[in-house]
Length: 339
Image (tube, rainbow, N blue to C red; front, side, top):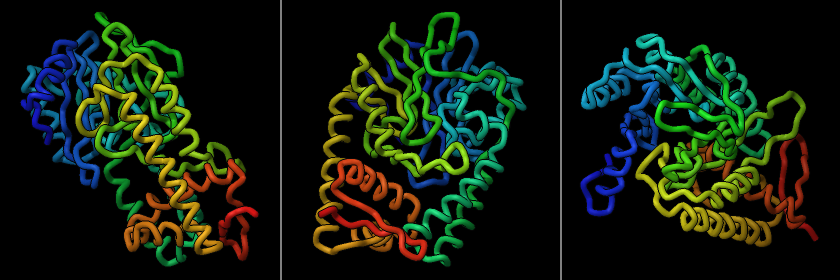
């Protein structure tokens, strides 16, 4: 849990409260730790990303609401920033308790209304991707079973209002402009208050950990795999130009210098790309999974999808620069440096 009384953070949380925003840390069963749920005490009373579908999470949400004089039934609008289960899992419970309006980006709507179907299709696609990039069939099947077990932390709810880039979320005392910032997920949405220079960014930008650009299933059958890291870098460049004095993230502490943080992320990406290129120069052709194991060891097996997402993102950058090429042999893709 964040210590909000430190000399560094106390004035930031005072500012957040002055803006009529409450940040609740909602527990999750995932390694990332608690998810930040934001309550905007305005008309309508609105929460962003209530958390995963668990008894522990709903209890934490209720306790936090009551600390500020609210009940679940008081919620009038639920906003979902993207389709990951640690953010959308409690929407159905909160909507049932409050009859609140559910709001999300157009690209998030299929996940909100058909979560289990979308998750199942993604699991099948991800399993195929793992095998294609060098993960053994048995490991891929086992990881698919784990992913299926995670679905219990998700939920489904009818979306009442769909957002697109450039829309404005209206309140009595503020307006939040909608910006689409894909990369970490295909539905990442950020919410900008130009008057206060505050950005609700969810997992688009996190202070102490990088927002992993995870592999995404193409929107349409037959389309190529989206280059999520390339897309994410483009999204970060757009956010870097925003005059934000405060960024509220989906996990961890608020951010007060987003430009420096984004520049650190860019430098980190450049370093990882060059390290991967050096590995290919030294070793010759390898699969993405072999490169992941060379970087992270056995973590690349237990966290195969996460590490594969990282490696393939770096390889996309190298391929786009014509520094690396790929060849598929017997259904498995191997990468090598170009002549």
